[in-house]
Image (cartoon, rainbow, N blue to C red; front, side, top):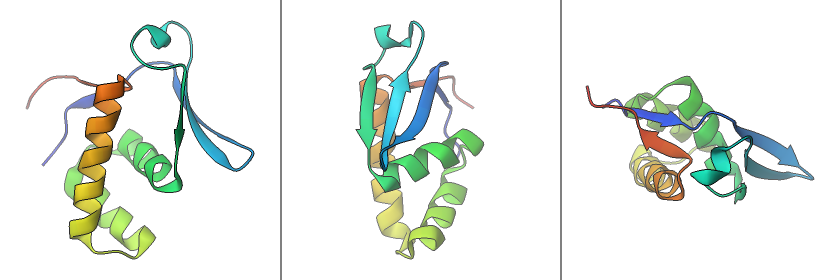
Length: 96
């Protein structure tokens, strides 16, 4: 399954003092918070999601990276996506 999502332009993932922070630059704060604190897993998802939107690939890579079952990763990743959509960092870019 492929997601048809896009990250808002001007959203940066930064590591500050060992913490991961999504930062909305420019006018993106109209759509999402100026900043959101992410845990290590969410930061990993964000980075991989910027590379691919294939859910199975993301789940497979994360399962290997974190050494956890794919079923757990899939549930967690899909919750992450919904959370990012609700906050406005991701939006639907169309359907395939």
